Length: 422
Image (tube, rainbow, N blue to C red):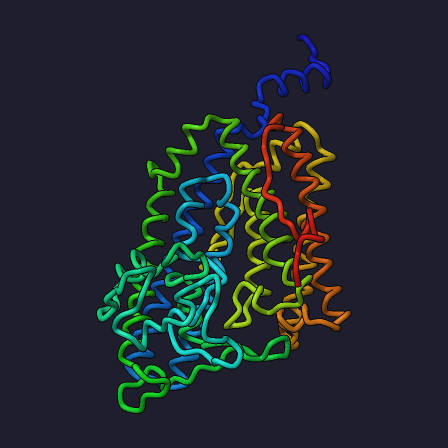
């Protein structure tokens, strides 16, 4: 009887056992699409919950129903902000995104404002204080426009970016946010907007024109839902977003992923959304400015970047969508680059969490960036530094995967700070 050595047996077993292969680009791109579908689907479901709470507010305008609608708006921001890493590389997303998340907005276009803080006119925006809710016609350019009927079509086709001014934001999350909270008149002191529930009352109306304010809130909410339905469909299997991604090929698809990560990390988030406001000490530069939710908005933007790289997303119901990831691809070629980037993504999340923790003490983003608030400024600067550092490692990951033709978004606040006028 022939004896088989342990070594020979081990070799034979090894040969018979399939070896786990590294992730393929095709698998990574599928995970990317699956996470997009899940985040947009969650954004849609939470927007539908928001609509239900707004319907309840309009049926019975009380402080309790207003607070419930505000809470639903805050919850709706959690999944939506985790879609933001899909911008910049995906034209279908970037061309659409302004419908739902454009900012900052000149709120005087929509409703009444405090004239002492807001003013009555702007050299850059002829409809700066047009107040659609208070008027049945406004002038846009040389044309008198009938705004008697406040409908989703009026908001999207006539008022959004009216007169080609980007700050004329009439649709999306921030228009709804303004209607639910009103102006934040606290500057860099604690406190958010404080619109009364009676602004939506037909029996005890405050603020005037409550019927039209109700109509605007309904139209904006319905439009948000239809816009999110469109993008959710785009990311389903066979949807236009998935098709466009596939048409780019494997390298083009991976380049799209990393372009979105790096551009959001550096130019958009570290630069335009955070450093600019810190440099100017200006609460008008905070993203969710009426609700004082900016700390969470930034936290989940950073989470979006991490989700794409790690190939995992935790849904609002607690389930997890995950699969082969960019991290797997980079690790297979340059483990040290992957280790460094993962560490830096975690460090950014920790810096963001410190900002969230400050907000829970009452030190929201607008307070932290205030002039003379040395400690608060330092908390925000650590976030900027962490995002900038991780972007350098994203660039290393780009190089590791042989995608060196990628150009990431920049920001004058980071690249040319002397050009920023206070």
